Amino acid sequence: MRAIASLAVVVALGSCSAVDNFGKFTVGDGGADLSLAGGCTAGCDCIVGNAALGVPDHCRVTPLNGFICPPIGGGRPTVTLSAGTYTLDTGAVPPAISGSDGRAVLDGVMQNGIALFCVGSLVADQGVHVVVVNDAPVVFVADSVIRISGGSWTLGGGYASDQNGASGFAGGTTGGTNGGSGEGASAGKGGSGAPGSGGGGGGSLLQGAMGGAAMGGTVTAGGTASTMPLAGFGGGAGGKGSSFGGGGGGGGGAIQFSASWAVTLSSVAFDASGGGGAGGATAGGSAAGMTAGGGGGGGGGGLIVLDAPDVSVMMGCLSVIGGPGGAGGGTLARGGDAHASTACGFVGTAGIGPANGGNGGSPASAATVNGLPGTANGGGGGGAGGYGRVIIRSHSPPPQSSPPGVVPMNAYQPMTLP
Image 1 (cartoon, one colour):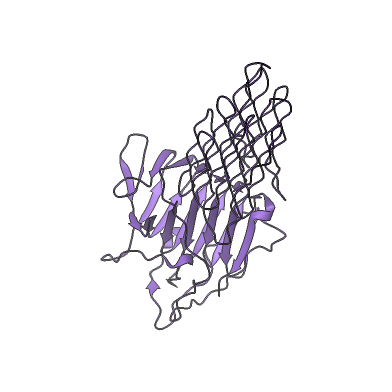
Image 2 (cartoon, rainbow, N blue to C red):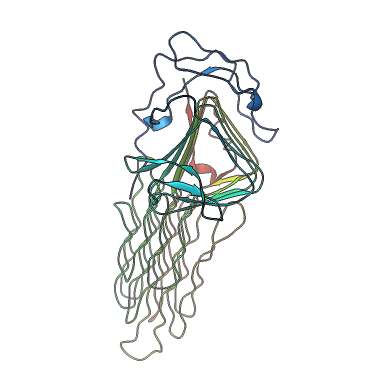
């Protein structure tokens, strides 16, 4: 699992300050005003303005987490994505964004395990849908603006459908398989026993929920909370019982957008949610020795970072909700799998347990929900994954009490850019 680095060491360039009148955040009233007065002070790294985008000359601002774009001759161009579906492959060499015809429209570089894309400005207007695949977290750094309107960006964890753990993307880790724990230090633990207990939910900003106990057994620990801003960790698999437990959900991914003038989002759906766990196998009857498997735990939610002197979010959603747990198997039926939602917010539904199987835990806004216990020879339900982080750093970020489109609201963390 690759993590976006600690925020504690990040500062703005001491030699660069812009003459501006920022100090505002727009929610729902048309977006950022890119015609603000600008200018460069002596000694700063001055970026030439772009009249077509309404951007004046301005000083470069060091991105959060200190990402450095490789030097090039001349200015970087504006990259415009037209309507369509794109694949952002962090495992390609180099990392690349490709259209539906397979042709790359933008190449990036790998920097300390991060897929880094450097542009003059990034413009993605209505109908742009980007799906992130493979393991590395993603960072965009723009000299001027990042403007995205309509469409969607998908980097949520996968949903398990059998005993195999689902994959995470963009830094999110894989869920547990065959009774094992998910991948990484804060992943949910695997269930155990016969019948099997549910797998623990993967951790993120919030710790993962516990997997439900089975008869004569104990609960399964969820993944611990991470103190640093990281992608989500996978959920643990359910205990196998006499057959198999459900696989754990994948962790949500991590993405950062940094610009030296403005980041503007309008009606964009960002899915960095945790994936869901699968249901445990049936006991196959009530004969002695026949026991059901536990449900898989949900994956932890991911990380979304918006970073510019002026950040604007209008409508849409920024989802880092944890994934739901799968249900424990019952005496005569397999436990229900967790199911994803395509509605903005991407709050999945937990698996429903059959007779004697425990329900999976549902994702929640304030605390994770534990899987329910199994009864008789049924398996326990998987715990829900913990929610991740949405960080907005600007001159005047919205207050903690008014997170713009963040799901769940408690995942929001404002930072003030000096």
